[in-house]
Length: 197
Image (tube, rainbow, N blue to C red; front, side, top):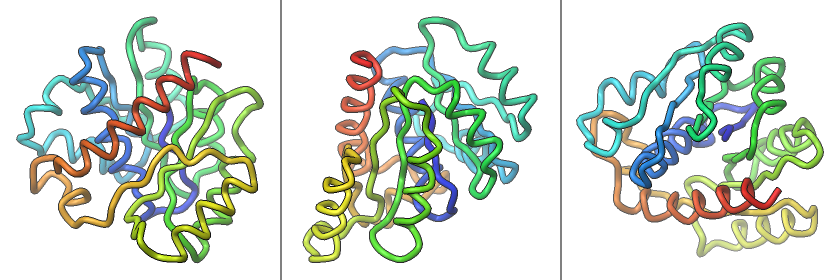
């Protein structure tokens, strides 16, 4: 599973960490591969006291070679979640080429839509993918217009994560129950898409 974005600040790392926690809670061996040179996912897991993250292994792989080696080491029944770096199209493409499923975090409005569209265009044919709308204000017209536009473009929206400071608090706080609930639905949709592709 790849958490893919070409733009930073759209919830890519938060998505990767929450999905890893949910996968581990479902008794899957989980490796979070942090391909971002900033190592935000690795820092989050190493600095967190949240019990749900203790069963997640983390591997830092900020280069093409390290990413490919890390993916090769993942066992057949294991789950790997890759947190890709923003703005690094070549490394993102390497991860997408090996993905069973792709989760694309984005936000409503601004340049985020065009950057999410660019990620969709990079995904190999036949690889299931869906959007996660991060920091969603689901009561706004902009949100509903964005969801409708993605539907018109035939891009699935697997879920929305509400705008809550606690969800993106990082290692300073335990994982947010609101975040776990929102990402649990996204996990189910992504897992189902991977199984049926």
